[in-house]
Image (cartoon, one colour):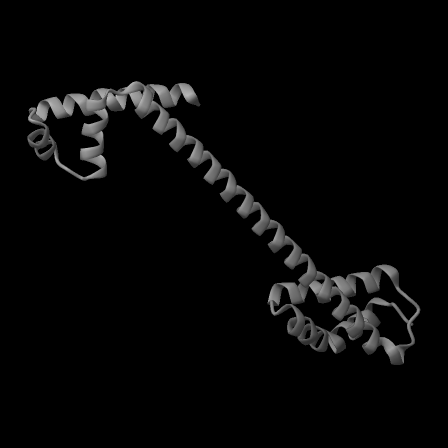
Length: 163
């Protein structure tokens, strides 16, 4: 087969449309299709195989099909790898969150008084205002504020140390 630049351009112009359509039917992506066809032509130019001119269309279409399938396979493997990484990241974040919640629970149970825990529970878990919490416990709203600030300060200190 003649691999002069002029003959190669003729092969390119003649067969590119059919190769692109085939690649697109496999990859379903314009960029991947162009890449597949470009790769086939680059390999044809680089290797310059001895092909019967009557068989060039079949050769190019088979090479395009193979390259397109390789691109799809690589895309699928990349997608699976990314999904696996996301799942692992999610598991790691769950473990870190669980560990943080355990540390928080320990800090609350070990560092706070029963009154501090009761005030935090009423304010944060039961969504009571400072006034509602104070009325329920028979203390002033400023005392509720003092307990909450002191409790949060203790919890922060424990959690900073735990990191």
